[in-house]
Length: 331
Ligand code: AQP
Image (cartoon, rainbow, N blue to C red; front, side):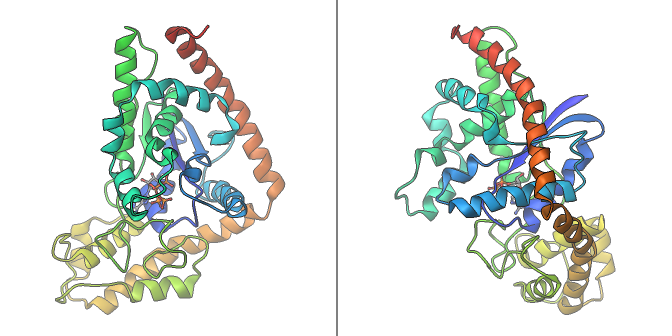
């Protein structure tokens, strides 16, 4: 039984990118692994965010986790900031990570570029250190993520190996990322060269939001997705990024391969294909949204899930932190 861990930042309404790249896969780890799933609320502070919006988003994510089939009796479902140990581990391991390594992180480069390289908080730069602390604090072996997070998990691996080797003993497990095949990087519907992100401009036409978008708006966004020259429904990321993105979305929701989808739509025009993509998305999302609404309206239950999860997470965190403190000489 492996220890698996993943989390999502409550930075905004979750998108179908978050759903297909991460959320939808979590429950597959629940039966055969010891699964830890958290709300990464401290990570949400790396860019400015309204406090009330952040609080709301935290509960939204817990309800989404439950709607996605996570059973809090099996999965340790918790909020990152409830576990003080993560802050201490973050401070310790920061000394074993180099500035050059953090400067090379693609997400840091993209997000700081978006800020025109001005007023970049140190937290944005050190985000991968805290993410490494999240992974190492719970002895994680497996981390299910979308493709954009693989670089950060690899950094956590390097740090774990570096620290183990420095002290010549196994202090940390070496985590590894598991990325799903299709759905690993869903692109923005209006700019299919760019990842779909929840912190894109709010209400963006290129982003499908799990909660905020209703059936009508999901259909509209898919029908007006940017497509490419030509008429063929064919997967070709370089020359047909728009159609390829829609094929990815279709295949992930219907569990079909790209070849199967290409065959089904061999004689189809773009309009008919898009209608089928919208049907596939809604077929799964409508019942999912209904479940979400039910959980979201029960605040007492959401709070009790977080309380219980924090207690269980803390038990492991205390043991691991003690091991680290003793190894580095902090006793
Ligand atoms: N477009 C995407 N396609 C596939 N997977 C995706 N993920 C995010 N976007 C896509 C996966 O969702 C999980 C949660 O991500 P996160 O909240 O920790 O941060 P992120 O990766 O930075 O996601 P966003 O939506 O782009 O958030 P913001 O805009 O706040 O930075 C991860 O497993 C991620 O890979």
